[in-house]
Image (cartoon, rainbow, N blue to C red; front, side, top):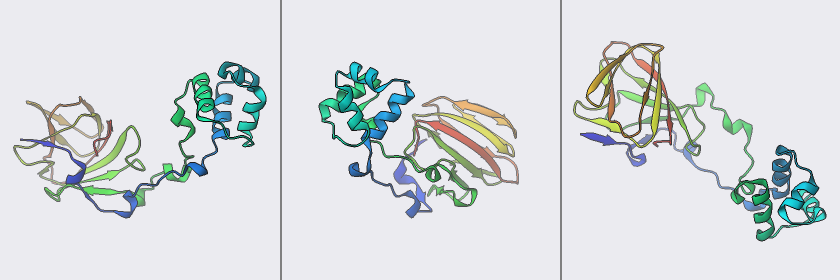
Length: 210
């Protein structure tokens, strides 16, 4: 049996922490974002205005928040800067929101059993990569004897503590502390801890599976 990972099959142990914030357009300073992109490409106001086919005075006013650009003007500026239009509407990130403290990780458990736990090492599920710590208790497996995990994302795993048997398609690979492995997308797999002590591993998946 192949077990496909589904967000709705997961129990969130911290419901409040998993809520998603919403961006308010009125809170976004488009002019500052345009200026940041411009300076990042080492362009002067005149150079960007010429490329975007708008006046330098209009661009200066937009950057200083003195003029509201039309969608057509934003489109021209985005094309000149070689960035997607939505890049101007993404909210600023608070650097505190990018950090996950050891004592404040979000924990996830599957309803199939209590023998293994995921702890998110990334702040949320909104990024392009998922980073997590998995703990597997001694003498247990991450799935029932005939079950396997399979997901669309490519996975890289590092064994942080202990020893583990990786069932990868029809092969069994023994991984020790300090070893790492890449699991291609779509390849069925499961983990088994042969020791009495718990096993810990860190994995990264792109795109995220949860």
